[in-house]
Length: 133
Image (cartoon, rainbow, N blue to C red; front, side):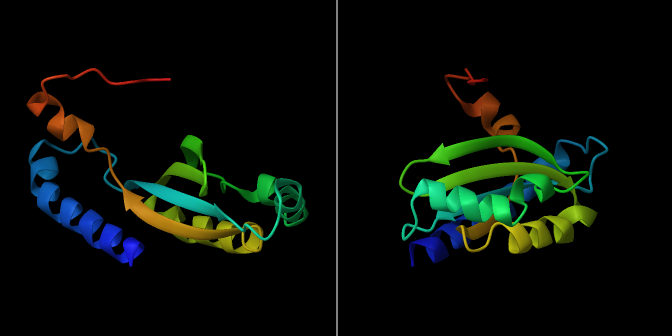
């Protein structure tokens, strides 16, 4: 239920801000998209077992696919890992196949289309400091 509510909220945000984003002008990368992937740990296995499954399935060799960039990769304690990728829309199928072939068994996955809202709301914020690592 929580995932359904989040998905609906995300879609509403995308819909309501899409006009504001398109009116700011395109930057020429219109076919690129961001994708957030949650790799949720299978809690029936410990970390060593998860790593063994991931390594045996070739995860580190096949993910991310060629032509796809990692924007960031975080551990979300109690959930697993969160990966944000930037990719041309034509590579979406390759990302999906890489997850299905090399991450399943070690993780349950959730994948969400994502975009950077900060440039749209930055001028509305009283504190515009942004963390960059």
